[in-house]
Image (cartoon, rainbow, N blue to C red):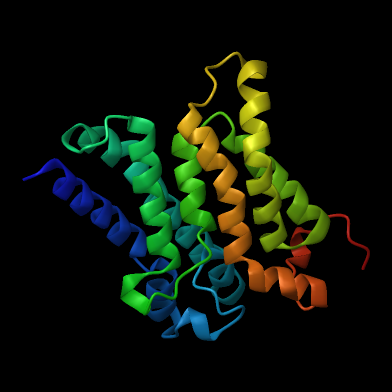
Length: 219
């Protein structure tokens, strides 16, 4: 099999892995509903958390993160030598983002999936393990202060390229390769695009808040 054809098949497999509609499956198993018909209408862990409770929500988030982590951490290192691209970082980026696109535009649910945050989070853990905890901390602080999961996701993604420049020298670890640095600059644009409706609702004052997460709110 030609290298390029093998690579295309490999990337499609990563897309199919990301396309597994975890939240939709859980919604049908637990309550017999299409999670996209309830709450925010989003097929992601946050909406499952809101509609079905924290246990199903946590399960969906973990599985969605694994959908992004597995292609980058396990599949790409095993199969990149058989493809036309010799740079492992580039192959990891392509395979991981294929899974993210699968989650966002799942072939199993008429290309209507989640926002891509959970799967992208798993991808970031594999690509940026030293930086991810700081991104998560920023997301948690934003959520506590505002109650908006969408805003927390956007701000955390925007902080990623900055953290990639600051954290490695601080921790005395190797800096991120150029390919990963460039990719980190594209991540915020993707997150902003998938959350464009949330941004509009925040501007209109209609966005749902996790008020239980707002530790400093005044009742």
